[in-house]
Length: 413
Length: 165
Image (cartoon, rainbow over all chains, first blue to last red; front, side):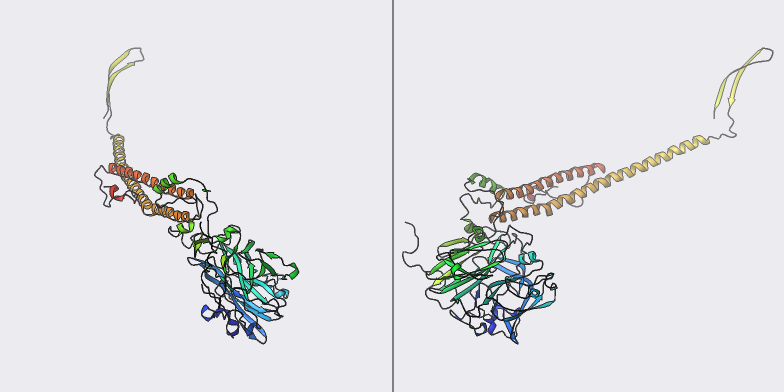
């Protein structure tokens, strides 16, 4: 889990996104870095992701998106066989500047037709990407060009508008960040992540597009805790986190230790007079939210969806409630019948992480609770990561666990 | 040949009775016993056909008994080699799901119940196999020895003590 910064915009002239790989990604140059290719703007860090490179052609920024099947690791121990863009799900983040003329070459390597809809963007109707309504479908093997001028700034998204339920369920989506032309609202660290939900049944690999409610995997940028990268920040820095949601549920995203303000949505900037302090931001379905705060207090601050089952990995939804049930006798009887049986849930589920480490589970299935912290099991999963604030930092690399000053850790008496 | 004797009487026109002995002889001029011969031949043919039918019935009965025996043997082997391992695998996979709190103990017990049910059906099938074996033995007049060894008990956990002769 080494945070990567891709500054490919300035180095990948002539290269298409399909050729982008981790090998060509570069380590972050550090805080307050800028790139001439982005017009001197602070580049956004897509958690666990990459930024789509472009080629400048006669003043037009040309990007290449390849819609294709992907094998994607949700966390070590679990993969999904889905669909995405340029080898990942979510696809690479698109980053550009207000006023840019952009062209997207979209190649369809899927077994069925697709389109790309540019969620939230103000553009000519025929570039909106709704299959059948504003354009013909992009058939397998075809490449379509979308071209328009970016007339706004903020955090947006892209996703198919063709067989949408299935294509979203299998992972086709990405973030689209547009920097303001006037360089207003600059921050010191700018992160982006996309929220999504999956139904990957225990023992399987293919996300089930027929599931509408009962999802069992909840991801930030296509990963679950502890595979989600931490947000690494130096004490005192101004931080923006851009959150997008293309799942079927609203996600109340909560930051420990701070209050923040919602400074923008995919509808545009929120006027300063309309911003009020929050500790949790509800990210509704099909929207983005930008939050900002100043990281004044060092530490390892949890950052997670506050629907508690969204910070868990697969768990059965039809289990009998055994909380408070004395299972001693029946556990012995069942063990005689099914050797290896262990009673569970009678005194709570907190020991599940410890037990799952010793008991075999189904193929390609994560335990419902994961993550080892400096004080023990973190007992989380899903949409959970850590904002790591440190006094001394040089880059975006994970600084490890926070060293607490003496007397500042809760302890037994 | 038929010989008939008797008394015959006759009254003449003048009213006088004449009585005398009567003898009837069938002269073999036209009837030379053909009907009897035909009947006897028919009876012979009938007996031959009955024998043939009996032989066919016996063969059919033996064949059916053998067919029943081999079918039951295949069923016993299918239980032993395919179905029971599948039910056991299902219990194992259900236990894995139980371990990760994906299913409850009731689901695990149902899987085990299904496995035990399959084993019970397998034992019943083995019992029918042995009855079929006895039927075949009787049909061929005893002394039946299969060239192939009979199947073991379809409970692969205890084959050593349950191997059948």
